[in-house]
Image (cartoon, rainbow, N blue to C red; front, side):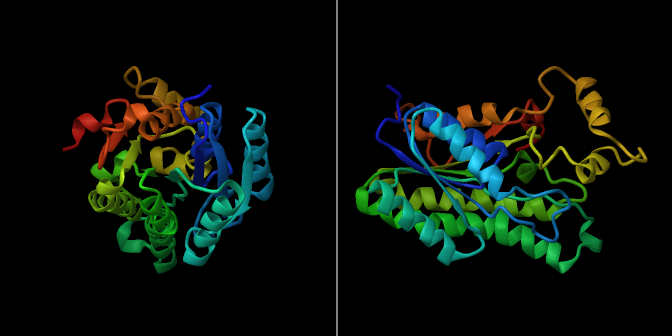
Length: 276
C-alpha cells in the first residue's frame, strides 16, 4: 500500500527525463498517471526532443508498477490542449489530485544576440505552459477542495546564467506563479510548490549544445569532458539524478508534505549557498 493510493496525477513533459521519473515514483507510491508531452521538435531547441515512443515507454514503466497510465500527446503552449488533458484525466479516472507542471526546454544564446523565436519559445513553454497547466487543473481541485501542485523551476532562476537569460527569466517567473497561486488556493486545501534543481542528468543537459556552454574554452567538448568537470568539483556537486528530484516531488504531493506551501525547494548540491 502506497501513500498515494487512490490518487490521480497529471504530469506534463513526461515522455522522458524528470517527468518520467515523477510518473514512475508517483505510480510506485500508488497513484494512477496521466502523462502528456509535445513529443515533437521545437525549432529553437538545439537537441533532440522526445518522441511518441518515449511517451509510450513512460506509460509502460508506469504500468509495470501495477498502476494505470494514460499517455497523451499535448503541447503546453495551447490552453485548449491542456484543457483536453485535464478532461481526459477526469473522464478516465473521475478526478485529479496532483498536478506536476514539468514540461520545459533549454536553449542557449547571449541576450544581445538572441533570436525572437528562441525567446518566445522559451517563455511560451517554460512559463506560459505552467500557467496553462495550472488553469486547466486548478478549478477542478477547487471544486474538490483538495489538491497538490508542483512546478519545475530551476536553481538558475535565483542565480542568473550566461547565455541562457531567457531560461532564467522563465524559471524565475515560475516561482512567482507558484507563490501567487499558493495564496489564492490555500483556503481550498490545495498546496502549490516549486522544485528548483541544479543540473539534472537528462537529455536537456546531455547534448553538444549544453556541453559547449559549460566548457566554452574547449573546441568540441564531449559528455566525458563534462562529466570529468563535475567529478573534479566538490563532493555532491555532480549532476542530480531525475529520481532524486522525484523523491522531493513525492514529499511535496504526499500527506507528509502538507505544510509545504508556496515554497521554492532547492536541490542544488550547494549552488543555493550562493543565492538569496
